[in-house]
Image 1 (tube, rainbow, N blue to C red):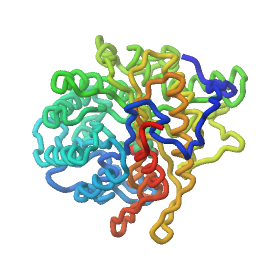
Image 2 (cartoon, rainbow, N blue to C red; image 1 turned 45 degrees about the vertical axis):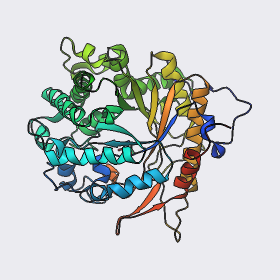
Image 3 (cartoon, rainbow, N blue to C red; image 1 turned 180 degrees about the vertical axis):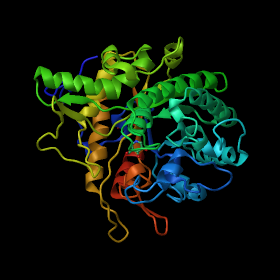
Length: 459
Ligand code: IFM
């Protein structure tokens, strides 16, 4: 796999390129899905209701200093109670699809065995509510809220968790069936392994590279086992996985900078992409990890390399790397997360995946930006977010024009929500949430997206 070079321009100029803010459905391939995305712990609240067990995020939020504003997902957007109006809101945006996740500890409070009927009932009502409103459900089975009881015996560092995950996946598929047309197993396994077990920023907050790499392998194994468990149950549904990918660009053309970028790319991207698509870990990265490499048993890589009906790509930014470490390019602009706004990286990433691998169809399952929004009367003016969405959707359009099979795009996020270690201090929503009274207000970006989603399919 090639590392993207800083001065490589992989995107030819298209003479009739529309201004990004003028995009319509007609600029995208026929059948392209527009949607919005959320995740369970970030929006649901009701963490103590109807038999839900604790997740690792409930525990993590109780630990002083873990969450910058000292908050938790206990109430969040109160979506557990307000879901009918939230689905109405999504419908009003004119989008086709809603990507949501299920909280494992609502369904199996102990992460194994006994099923909590109320938890499954909730997701069944939610899915039926989407279908009644003409919205296609795109379910994600694991968006980081692992049952705490499983963490108590090692979490993803324990191989058994992969088998427990497959059991849970089967339970969900048996109940929701093909009313859900698309199931993603995991969301962003880099985050639930490296960010959580090595960097310590996410639950369970460990700083142990060996445990992190072991977790990454068991997550991928759990993905493969879950795919196998679900195939027979929902043969018509599309099954896949969602990765967060972050292309690494060398700061200069020097051999040292290019090598550093390749390393970064290997650890962040190839470590996850290649077992899934090629059935092997990248050799250069494996060697570099020395004694910390995970224990891989016979057959694991075949299990991980299940045929995928789609790959979800979450894209927010790129890395800009020199031999001395991460750098900030001159003249760049940044979101409130401190992430560079770099739409070209999305085109480059999609084209490169398509060039380097035999890819299944791709969905952009997350893309979006945090900015400090403030309501002005009944409006929330967020021109930077409008620009972010417009330029990134244009980047997707360019990739499709270059032949990449991108089938849909999900804006992150439907509404402001609990942004993990940042609590409620970062707002990613198309919809502004007043956490005092739970009022939802469409930001200008929501109205912009609504205009695109409601536009004519043909010119
Ligand atoms: O909010 C998160 C989401 O849960 C996973 N992907 C990145 C988003 C923004 O940080």
